[in-house]
Figure 1: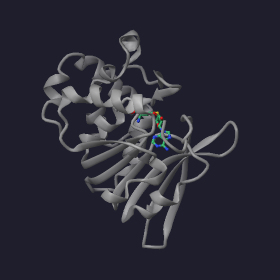
Figure 2 (figure 1 turned 180 degrees about the vertical axis):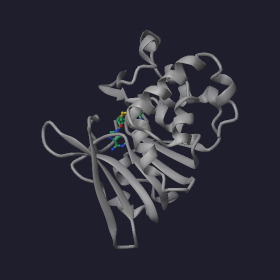
Figure 3 (figure 1 turned 180 degrees about the horizontal axis):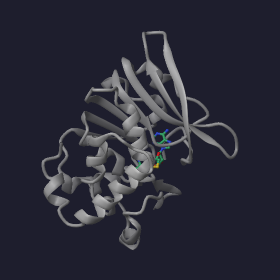
Figure 4 (figure 1 turned 30 degrees about the vertical axis):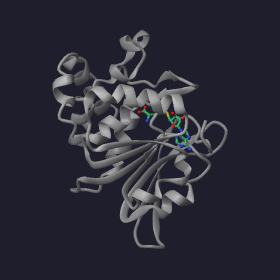
Length: 222
Ligand code: SAH
């Protein structure tokens, strides 16, 4: 945990608590995830002009045609990443965006790696996260479709952007017993959340869950 995260977040405590209540009302039950939502100051990851909406349960623009994800969906995905009664070990996030979900994950996992393919967003996340001095989070500029072989295997992999399927490299880099949570495109209008658990080196168990809406997973860096 970033030792500075709690004290830095003392202001707006009521708003953060209210957001955690909205996330709980949306169906998230995992207490530690709800506590993390109640701890991270979401407005700090957004433009000043949007601070008034930061504690609503909605996705909002962060520039470069990308969004900060909807808090209840962030929390739902992080809840799914947890195996019952297990703490999260090493986690990979694809799609840092502004860095909000990475900050939430840093409170729950031992180590977090987060990849972003748009340079200005990677730089923005770095500067927005700096004041929190989170020491278990690494930001990487690159194409998340390739994963991060040098840090694999991961106990958890979470995608913040929707592709047509799950990239093979990410399935390979999942630890046995690890979980991957990702939105996947079903057709022009629909995306679905998938939970994939690696049962053995060759066997993956796949569960299709909620309907969701995410920005597209794109290849290459810009
Ligand atoms: N995690 C963010 C959500 C950001 S939106 C949050 O906390 O709210 C999803 C992000 O995924 C965008 O910034 C987009 O640029 C990024 N993205 C899309 N395809 C990617 C890829 N192949 N590798 C890394 N990042 C990618």
